[in-house]
Image 1 (tube, rainbow, N blue to C red):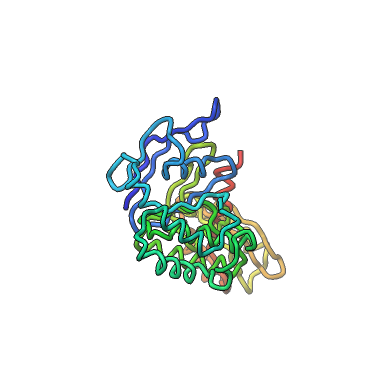
Image 2 (image 1 turned 90 degrees about the horizontal axis):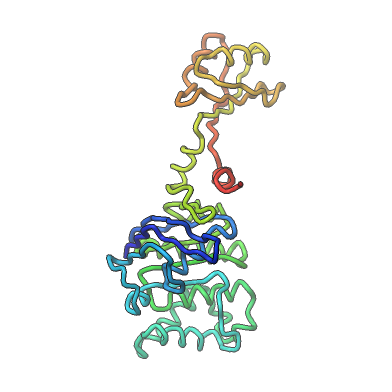
Length: 307
């Protein structure tokens, strides 16, 4: 089920939490929603799920802008603060959530058992939620979001409090679900975004500042080709001068004099690989390393959101 956001806006007093943003998420796509604290991520998610009313713009879900009960039933939502009834046992709570979603009584036991298995709750399933660790409470929140098999999943910081093994398990679960559902995933864990999401949307001060695949964003951020190279047999200062003389090279840094390692920045929109290779052949030097460097997702995030 597709989601289409058109010129969405939300203010709290004089502060614009979400400022005229537009984007789409297609069925079978996992969108990573990134941004610093207070950027507008959670507010946007709450508007998509119907928890908040937009001040401006429209939200189109499955071709309809009418966010009624029937549409909301097709959405699974894990809020950032994961509100739970701490006095309820896990199984009773999931049974209750399934009932709230309008599932038939004959379906509920099977579905609850399935969610307990999928979210790794089997050992803790008879405990009260208040007796669980933060990581297991997060799993219960995920289970309630998926209990009714929704077509859309809105997950706000779903791996908060999980240990590394649990994070990998939940990440794989989200990737599996993303093949057939529409998923919007908010997180601060940048490697998780690269490992899980098909597309990344970065929001800052209520506005979208980047939208694309991790590879596309890195290429856009790079601007100029950067190579890390090692050239053997030659004298380091001589190599340095000849690298600087290449017309395709903008700048050269010596990284390790003893190892003849250099970092070479090419001219904008130009690649210097072939020129460096030809230079080495001409001078009888051995080009033993040539490693292209890419901007990391963290570099991109900081560049777009640090004011």
